[in-house]
Image 1 (cartoon, one colour):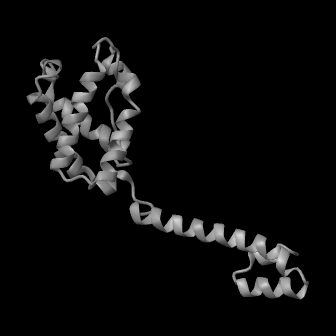
Image 2 (cartoon, one colour; image 1 turned 120 degrees about the vertical axis):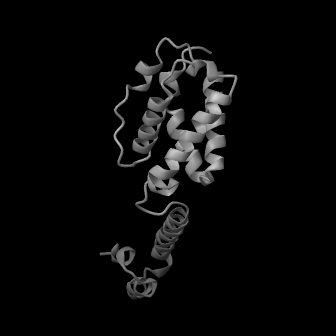
Length: 173
């Protein structure tokens, strides 16, 4: 019964309940701690909801497939102009690459697309891709996202998804 005040919606009800039992001074500390933590949780929840609208996928927050398409188009253009890594794409079917990238990013961000390409490890095995190669690709991708005005938080989330794939792509230091 003494926990009734914790579940109460009203501090006044809790104080009255504790006061009637002569327990106000000692039990009130517990109530204030619980109430304070509850308020802190509520405020933290409000801050988090302001930054990321509840229920909206990264796909939706980025702007969906139209924005992903623009980012991929620009990224591939950047990569093909990047002398550090463009040689790696000399024999690549660029149209197919773009389609796979759009589907992969769309699906990875929570969109409705289905990626039907090979997994990252199988795709990149034997290519001796280095950390520097991946770094150059990421720079080209960031430039593309900047041009498409992808918000900073969404950009970082997408880069985080890509970082998780590095172990399957990088073979050389």
